[in-house]
Length: 313
Image (cartoon, rainbow, N blue to C red; front, side, top):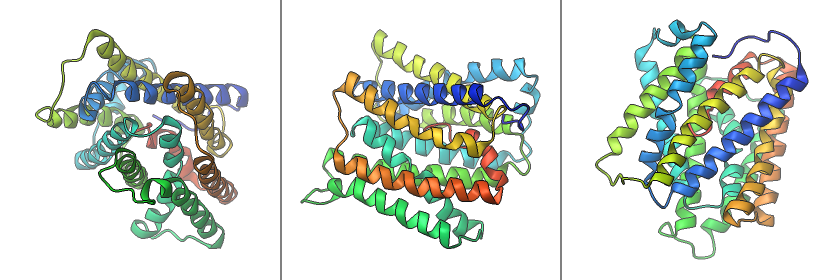
């Protein structure tokens, strides 16, 4: 779905990217608000199913629908679906257990884990600068989750379990990015986005025997809205990369923390702790080094980033 840069319109690109980030954060807040009413697997179903018509309409408007229906590597799409759906389900579960800003902050570690996994599975070389970024980022992660793991906390504690699930989801999203780096060698990006929504919808149905609930009308509307909002956000973030380079837009991902703090406070009366903010600052610093280094090296894979991580999958 991601095309090469077609024109340099930085203000439009930033507007699209920031709007998308705001919508993704709103979607996460909606999922959090429904967490006490429906299980995570059911939320994944609605999030995925109702994003499909938005994606299909957009692909039709761009004349790319046929690319979205061609799968040269079907099993590659299946594995992308398994990894992405698992990440989404874990994230949705964790949203019901932790404050929205904390979930957002831990999620910032995805690029750090991606670097580590790229070195392990793809044999990519990580030199001193990026090793330092990894160390700083991991230190930030440990600072954020340590209060949940120390002081006599046990895995049965809701917040402790939530932190562990979000951390695993973050690693799973990094695995998704590694997998997509290989998948884009043979598959059109439209196909990757389209089939992920389809497979996530199908895989979520496997959780049907494990406690799905018939939602009330207001919860149902919120779940449907999460799908529509997620689909629109994906389109906006993808479109933003047509008007500016990935390296320029990457720092705006961290606007999600501002949105999460505001929405978390207004909707859920949540406030971030100083420890969480300190850890998030270190993670962002580590990511900033990675962004700077990869922009200097001209790493082409950064251009595929917006479709790699559709916020939760």
